[in-house]
Image (cartoon, rainbow, N blue to C red):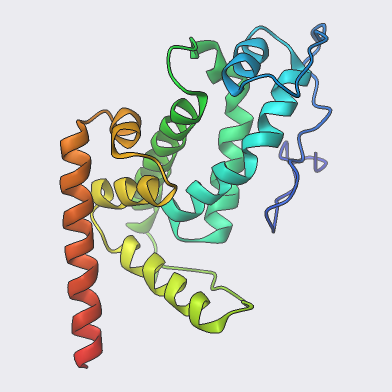
Length: 211
């Protein structure tokens, strides 16, 4: 933890989770984790098992960061959002009952956190001038792939929030049914949103290609 900040150091790349060894002043339970499911780890962590919590974040941190990156479109914002979620996770785990996949539950937490962050950003933007992206990709091994990824992120940022959230989840290889569980809508609604998002993005590309 950085002195005086109450925050863990930012992760600039997808790497092993920085929360290993985190303790919460409770007795750690000895658990064999290699074959333990995410759901079992989450329930153990909710009961105060700090080692289970550390192992759970080690497994899920990178995929959580990747989702936050798609939801925000900015690496810096994704880092902040991921840190906020991890900091709040010990308390939120008390609400996990194991009746759904942990990944689905975690993505719902992430989407809700992203919504809260957007609301705060919108409020701040009213008093700001020239608010916008503050960071661009600095380098990429494949320049063409990097440009396509950058273009897609910009295109997604222009989508309505419901379409952007839906597309971000589906791009994470969630099924339409799982994405529906995360967002609290039907599978059919997810399919419609994906179709609408693709139409908007395709039209944007065609317009740009003509100019």
